[in-house]
Image 1 (cartoon, protein in one colour):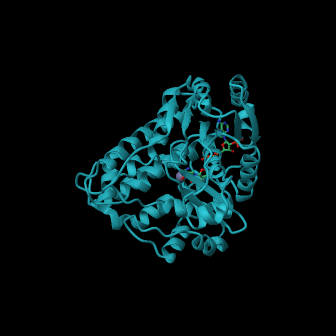
Image 2 (cartoon, protein in one colour):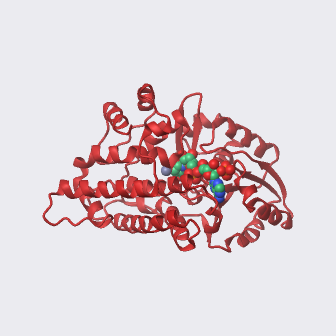
Image 3 (tube, rainbow, N blue to C red):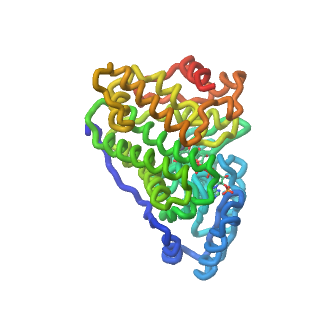
Length: 388
Ligand code: NZQ
Ligand code: ZN
């Protein structure tokens, strides 16, 4: 481990099929006004909403709501939630949903009392909050983003055609998150596998960098192996508790800062994927699955030793008698077979991307320098072409 770092994570987790009961205990730590934030209605259909409203009422809370948080939450919706949180002077924001609802709740928590435009301050200028922050707690219903235990918040500004993430510090991370794997059973197959790929991609973004022998990379390999194993079971039987619980736990550790310790990180698949998302509003995990293989094939030569290690340690490719290039390429081929097997989207066309969008998507792609190769604008366009 060559890097210098500090590590702490303030989010308390409650995990398991009876974990919701701990919400009552957590609620005693906050004032009486709770802002309940949720998405487009899945929690009403599957009964989670009723359970939570009952617990809030038993705890004597005064509850206001911001429903209708869309997948890929928008800036307009953020303004709406910030207004409600401030006017109702809420003491706690309770996010019940997937990454979109958790991300959005964090954005509301730092925007309610923000004296400037939150889009300009947090997302364009990437500044940290200087105002009062409302505490956030999460009940997670969709697995993938890691938002339940990180400071990430991604907001889409459709007018500017930009989807930008801000990674806030520990003061914005959820105070607690409740992870009940059975709450994820009702997710559609499409969203479920998109979430699985989001997890793999988060791990890869942190794995494909650096040349030192680093414990973080061994942790990453273990998480990837667990995910690949359990994902194959979960697509056949979405109610397999063992598989779904392993995947839920893997997702949290894939992006709660741990496996980035002592490393630079890449994140270029996310940068391209988010720009695709700004143009198409496509499902986050699918934007990543469509661009990943072309991106990795594009940069493979620059990070050959790690790609060979990925092939051998994660995909169990036998390197005997093969060149490093052949072994590494076989690893990416095995990844492709897995992706096809679980039903991921492998083409940007399927997500509504047209060639006329390439220039704009490239304009909205932030170029980061932590990976094995720093992309040029032409590289981004080439990768988009190869992803069609
Ligand atoms: O809105 P409802 O009706 O709840 O439906 C949602 C939504 O349509 C549905 N869903 C969620 N839980 C369900 C369910 N349907 C049935 N049963 C359940 N139990 O699933 C759909 C997708 O939900 P969403 O929250 O949008 O998915 P996800 O968790 O993938 O979050 C995506 C957002 O997170 C951002 C993405 O960019 C995107 O905006 N990310 C956040 C990150 C972070 N905080 O660190 C990192 C990620 O890379 C990502 O960028
Ligand atoms: Zn992601």
